[in-house]
Amino acid sequence: MSGPFRERTPKTRAYRANVKPKKPLLRTGVAERHLTASRDAVWAKVTAAMPSFEQGQPRTVIDAFGETYDVTEVAISHEAPWRLVVDVTDGPIGFHQESVVIVPDPAGCIAMWSVLAGPDDDAAHAYAIAVTDAAEARLADLLQEL
Image 1 (cartoon, rainbow, N blue to C red):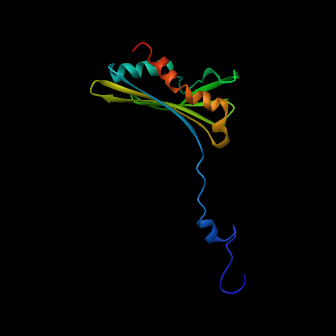
Image 2 (tube, helix red, strand yellow):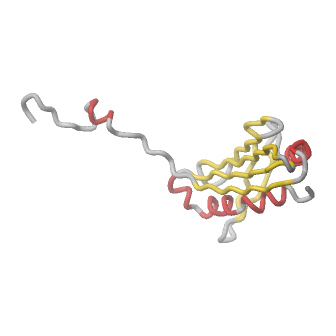
Image 3 (cartoon, one colour):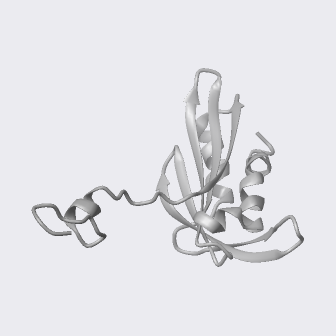
């Protein structure tokens, strides 16, 4: 185009300024339990069952098609006594994190388990579906005797 007007192509600043980066699509799973146990008692149970920073903890995940995956869980954030974040590696998807959050409540505490899996096309993978759908069961197993 000639004259005082320029064509907007991917190389021009005006074009790049209007293009927003795409947010990754993540599959999520969340579970929540209201407990009469104290937050300290729940935290002790969580830290005994979850991996440490120094070493990974092996786990086997089975998807809806019966495919098994041996993964490793490694703690990446530990904020006692309320949050623990675990990175899950060696799985068939690019990103998988799980976290436990414990907040005080007048009757005891609230424990929450959340799972993020993806990104994008990996969010529809059978493995991502299996780990996000299992959030409630994982929290129930963790809090079994409380």
